[in-house]
Length: 350
Image 1: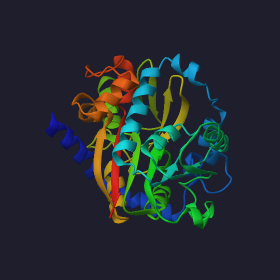
Image 2: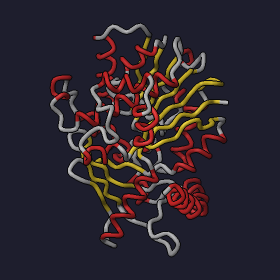
Image 3: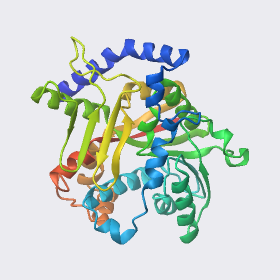
Image 4: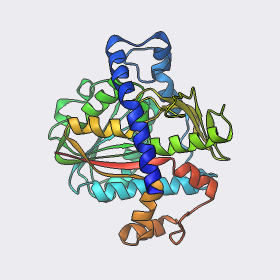
């Protein structure tokens, strides 16, 4: 099984190498009108640049009681556990944190428990940032915080964040469930990584969660095997629908290294928002060139095996979260299918 997975990974990578060079060249020469229409993180004022912001601005903060009644409460609980583990494992007590894509501030308490001294939160959705600021003011936290509405995938951080908040460099940079929005083209992915690496101190950590390209590829391959015309897959809780499926003689399902767009819907959370496949090998190599070395990469299923089922403090944390700690699949199987689309990563700045 392991050999099959590795072979699949190699096939994706080998097929993408020439395409990566072509995409980078196309980015330098300028996007076509069709690409511009798909561009979610345009630095200009085009309507496409506001799609993600509009989606998250429109979503109301349901409140704790309503969240407990959500049909995907087990998924939300598990995702919060994953983020808590990453923050406790890689965060630094007394450190400074840059929370990119921090949304409504759902991780503020997690950072408080980590014992940080200062946090800068940035998100493209202005309403979400306002709600994060209000949440911070309403709660008692032991750290200072500043909040900015900006597109960290389309604009340099220093254009919005004052220099005095960018120095000293951050101990941790966090991108939770948002990095994939910056993978629409090479330029945005490169700028995103610049914004991370430039302001992360040596020895500091970059942590993130985003859809797993290998899992997306595997599930789409299974769907196409059942129906050669298939462009989507999912279950009662989620749906992934690709705009187009690229095929080659050597690889019946080929993902572009950048700009491989699909629409994702998740019950009670995400209403058909455009996302982009994050090519893991491209991300790892681009990060390496900016001095970021990967120290962890695992699908959420593997993450659960390592940090949940095998004992230790994070298993106890999962128990306190109300997760079924004695089960390999700790929730409804269809819901677990939505959870395990994602992967977690950690990098260290050298």
